Image (cartoon, rainbow, N blue to C red; front, side):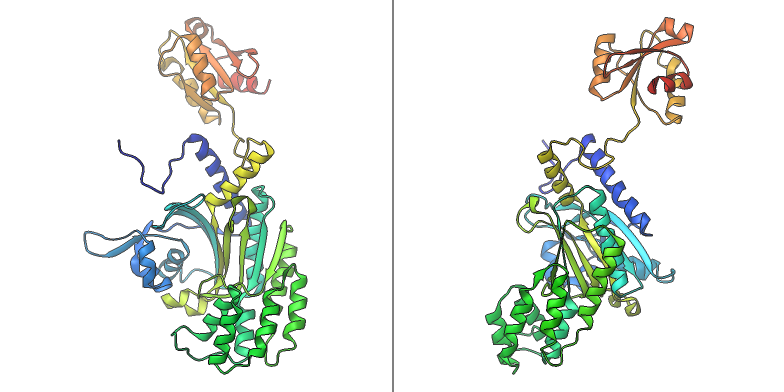
Length: 444
C-alpha cells in the first residue's frame, strides 16, 4: 500500500477547517496593518538559497535537476523567494512595500514534534523603509496576530545585533583571524553561547584588553524587561569609544510597540542575542511558548540585508518575520486541551448552519432548484445522494454535522409544504418549500 512520504501530513476536513480559520485570522491582521498577500513558486533556483546561506545548506534541501539540467530546489523558506520576486517583479512599485505570504516549505531533516519535512510558514516583509518605527510596526503585527489567535503564556524576546556590534567595534575588534571567521562574528558567537573563555582567547589574539570581558559578561546577564536598557546604558557608558546609538534605537522601538500593540504576556530584552544569521542588522526578536518544550520558538525575525544580492542595496535593510504556522497551532491546541475547550482558533466554528435535504420517493431533480436558491442565499446545503431509508438518512444528516434536516416526499412536493427538523432537540418546524420560509425556520 502506498503511504504518504516520511515527514509529511494529511489534513482531514476537521483539521483543515481549523487551519483555514487560523490562516484567515492571520491574513486579516496583516490586512489591518496594510500588508498585501503575495505568492511565489514552490520550487526555485538552487542558487537563490546558496547565495543567501552558502553551499552547505544544500544537504538540508530537496534539491534536484529538472529535464533541462537546471539546478532547482523545493523552497526551504519564503523570505529569499519574496526578495527575488521584489527584485524581479516589484522593483518599480511604490515603497515601502508591505507584503504578506503563506505556503509550504521543505527541508530534508529529521522531523520531531512540531517540525516536519513539509511544513507551513506565514510571514511578512516591510521593504523600502528602515528605523525603529518600521521595526515597531512589524513586531506590533506579530503581537496582534498571536493575541487575536488567543495564544497565552508566550514570551517576546527582543534584542538588537547593532548593540553588540557597536560595543565590539568600539573596543577595537576588527580585521581577520587565523580561523578565517571574522573576529566580530566569532565574538558574537561566543557571547551568544556565553563562552567567555573563548571570548578572552579571541581578545588575546586580537591584542584587545581582556578587561573588556567582564563588562561584556555583565551585558550578557542583563535579561529582563524594558529596564534592561537603562542598566545597559549605564554599563556601556563606562566603556570608552562605545556608541549607544543602537541602544537608543532599540528603546525607541520598544516604546513605539507599546503604543501600537497590546502588551505581550512577557517581554524579555536580551542584548547578546545573535539569531545565528549573518544578515541581521538591527532589532531581532523571537517568540517562545513553554507548552512546546525545549526552546519552544514559534516566530522569529528582525531587520536584515538581503536585497543587495539582487542589486537593490538601496532598499536594505528590510524588516520581517516568519511565523511557524504548525507550531503555533500545536501550542493553541495544547492550551485548549488543558482548558477543556473544543474551539482552538477563534472563529473556527463560526459557520452558517448546515441543512441536509433528503428527497424521499421523488426524483432528486425536483429539489435541485431549491438547493441552488438556498446556496445562493448563503446557506450550506448537502443533498442525500444514496437513496437511504428515512431512519438511515436522518442518521446520515446527524453524522455530517447538519443542524437541520428537510425531508421532501411526494405529498410535500405536491402541497408545497414540508417540515424542517432541528437535530439538536428534535423540534419540527413547518415550512413552505421556498427559500424565505426555510430561512425563517433557522431563526425560529
